[in-house]
Image 1 (cartoon, rainbow, N blue to C red):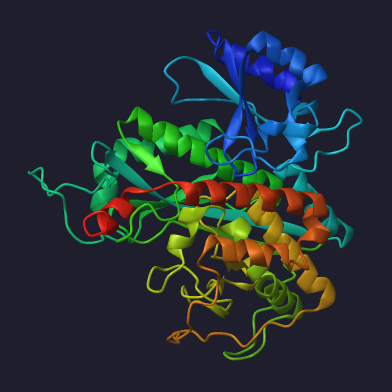
Image 2 (tube, rainbow, N blue to C red; image 1 turned 30 degrees about the vertical axis):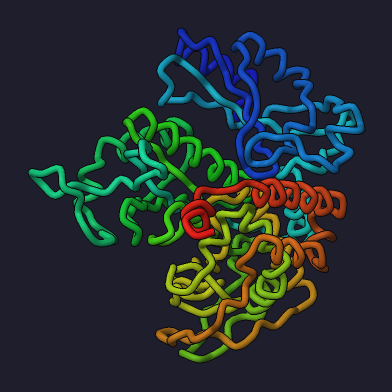
Length: 459
């Protein structure tokens, strides 16, 4: 039987007698962890009675600014709600210079109703739809990110390996280079160790196509909420461990114009009450149709992709990734064993048959991204949405960019959504749109250095 929070506190106290401080983590609308520190003694009281915290802690832009135009957190007096500790999430913070622990929070009303802006609760509401069908989503996340080692210039510089015996940086993309991993062995060993201590099921690490870019895979779990906990905490872990090693890690979707962007790929299958994968069986021969539930799941995801893109790509930088030749989807398509499509069916046996959702950037809120994916899957299965023809294995894709590649266009599609409001909640969708448009307006009101580079010399 899993520990209760109080048992977990006592176990942690015995394991680390010097521990005094705990960080309480609240994933905001953008998937950025906000919160506060408390003492270990205070945590015992919070475990029993909860913590009062304002909902404005969720409703922030990427900089931590309050969102203008919302009643919540402004005209309503910014009232406190009740936050509860998430069971199983109390773990040490191995990269901290002093003994420290962390625990996730979830927000609810005083009467126990979930708060509409809590992205964990939003995902839990979608998962309840699958439980009613007797189905369990199995989810795993893959993250791409860049390491940076020089931030003294006007912009950051990716951490590229050195030519052995010199201080010269190696040229080329260095994709799948084992030498790059060897050079960073201390870092990746520390990431693996910290993941084990925090019970985050991190798996393989590869050097990705962008020089200085890496990917860490998380193992599949039959609990989508837990899978997203793993995802948001892995980002925190990688950034924290990198900082202890004199580096910086960024999960920006497109930190460099001349290199590939970083995505968050979500692998998904569905199990019935007997543990059978309902996406099976595999087609009897090449070219034969996949099982109805797999096809309908794909149909739902593609039908809702346009209205969901504002969640998968939540800020201005996100859309710099959606361009041809950058290993990011540019159209609503699908296919088996093809990395150029939005929904990919990886090579697998019947028991592990799954879908890989590829449009989301590494900068998105994983709870909301998975909630939007699963909402579309549920819609597709329950209304039997048939997908368009598949992209065949090895086929060269000639599609134009038909996914929105500007922030406002994606938000316009989100505001016209027909699927998401019924799953995520109409008030949530309204608030999400207001919040994202506020940040977009603030972003475009700034005068970037590029304006001076392009226009100041001649105008």
